[in-house]
Image 1 (tube, rainbow, N blue to C red):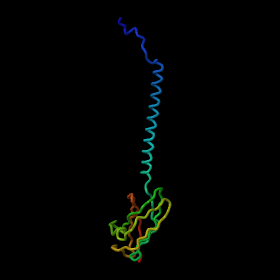
Image 2: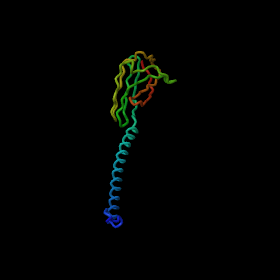
Image 3: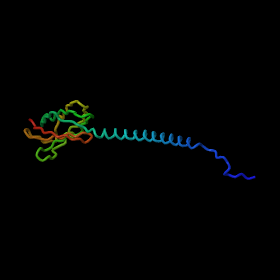
Image 4: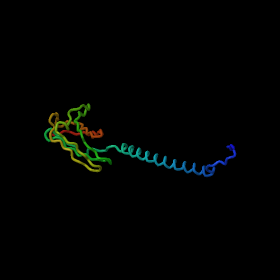
Length: 156
């Protein structure tokens, strides 16, 4: 004798249990998605904040001479370490490059920690025509490309 399929008692989970199960699955998925997204946001925010902290420094004092070279006091006023990698002597009237003080002397980069002042000395200005009493611009460049320009009058 064949059984009618409509007379069979259906076996399955109750509608209330199914609704509760769907709610639990949805909440767990939402929590996992929130945790993933907040981790992504914190990683992105930390990258942006590190990019938003530029190098900040200033030249407190500088002296330039054809015989004794360059002495400058550079102060790091920012919150990240500054590395001076280039110093250029420029014409003060037109901004033209006179010479690169770093390459002519075998200058090693100077690292300046936040809140400190370091002396930067270049003893030889070979290849640079420096005249006593003339005003020059000194361009300091960091490893990150930050630039700072200051004026100096050459002494004898």
